[in-house]
Length: 342
Image 1: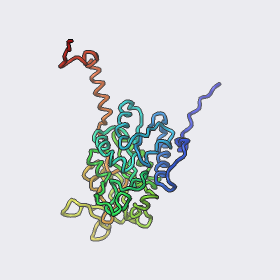
Image 2: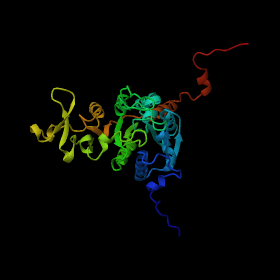
Image 3: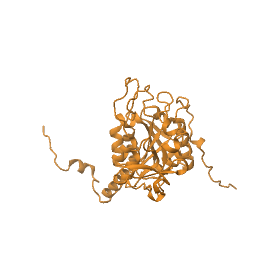
């Protein structure tokens, strides 16, 4: 007698492809890949229903290293191709992987409209504040004064905030993580995957060759407690060693300020409580920078709305049920037409 056995659960290793991983030793992309493989295992994602789409750059190698479907597309156009994939087959779980140069420079227009339309997919932006694949030119997120082959005297550009842009473009899910945060990153990826609509996750990622330690003032163990704040919906905005600091609205203004609990009669009741459904609060948190304010990590904003692909298919079904446009020949010849006689 044959006895049916339950399928064996997939592990993180089961999502690793047979391709040699070819990033520079020590690159932050290794950590992100490991976090993604762990995430897929925790979700028990079906490889045949999962697809990773990338553009150009170091991050764009990502699809090669996962045992799922993948498309390595062209510079900046991954959002457009991923949108087509999702519209053509809404059952697929679509992930887009891009870098700060790929997504925010030549691809800025495509990213903006992806967020505005709210296509149901996950967009991961690896932000190392530099062009790594093309040998270290400055990128849209590089800070003022950055010296690079394309800015030997220092960049004069004002850097672009990826999370602020995502919110301004109408993004309904905006989050931020760190490449080495192996506990928090899979949690963020799972939250993003569960969200219906475009999920935008910025990941601070170290480029060990061309921009090493660019985030050390945020991530070094000695400063991390005071330079980072980890957001939890419904909980007070506290940070620092032992949670001794917090954020509140500065009296008489609309600005955030850091306060120390216990000083000047400040208590936890005086602090802001994180509400990830508040776009104004998300905007304030996304713009925070040290040394005056900590950098916010976690889900900054989550306010679901009908996705573009969902609405497109509902519109098509409604049109078909009403019998509209069932005659293609008639559709082509309706309205203003001309007959050309010889």
